[in-house]
Image: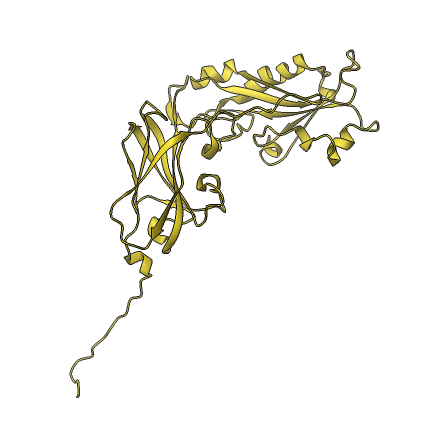
Length: 313
C-alpha cells in the first residue's frame, strides 16, 4: 500500500500515569470539642510514606510533603478543602505524588488578631513558648493519622477531623545550677495589643549559693529560641564537668527567649515590623535578670556572644 501526497505525523506524549489517575481531595475540619469558636489561620494536610512518626512531626526543609491554605472565620464542622490547586512543599501539588500507600494527617494552625499600637491589624500565629514551631504549638489542632492509597479512583473527599489539641509546653524545672524566668513585657504588650512574654535561662557558677556576697561577670548568649540549658550544660557531660570544676573561672551564663509573631527570635532590635524588642530587652529583660541574680552591673563585666541570629544581634 502506498501513501502519497501527504506526510502523516504522529506525536506521542508520555504522561506519568499518576497524573491521569484520580487524585485525593481533603476536607480539613475541626470539632466543636477541640475548638468552639471560628478559626482564622491556616489548614494543612501532611503526608508520609510510613507511620514511624506522625506526619506533622516530620515536616521541614528536608521533611515529608505538606500542603496548606489560609482559612478565615471557619466554624467547627466546616471544611477547608485541599486539592490539586493548593500549593505544597517539597512538591508543588498533590498530583505530583506518585501512586502508592500514604499516611495522612490534618492540621490547623490558629492565628491571633493583633491590633497594634501603630494602627496595623494583623492575623498571625501567637507563639506559645514553643519557638514558632506551629506543628507543635499549644492550642493548635491535629487529626488522627489515616492510611490512604493514591492512584486509585476515589469515591469522594477524604475528611480529616482535627479533634486533638496540642497541650501546653511544660517548662523544665529549676535545678541547683539552672534557673528560668518568664514575664509579660509591658513594652511589647502595648505595641502588639496582646500579651507578649520575655524569658531567660540562667546557668549559675559553682559556689553561687555558698558565697551570697559574691557578684559575678555574665555572658549573655543570643541565638534561636531554646529552653535548653546554656552551653548544653548537663551534670556529668563534658561541659558540665568543665563548668563545675575548681579550675573554671566563676561567671554566670544567660540565654534569652524573645520569640515574636513573625519568628522564633526578634533579632533583639527596634524595628517598624517587629516593634520595640530592643527596648524591651535592654529596659526589661536584662534588668530583670540582674535584679534577681548577683551580676556585676558594669559594662566591663558583661560579655555578649551568639551564633546564627545571635551572631547578627
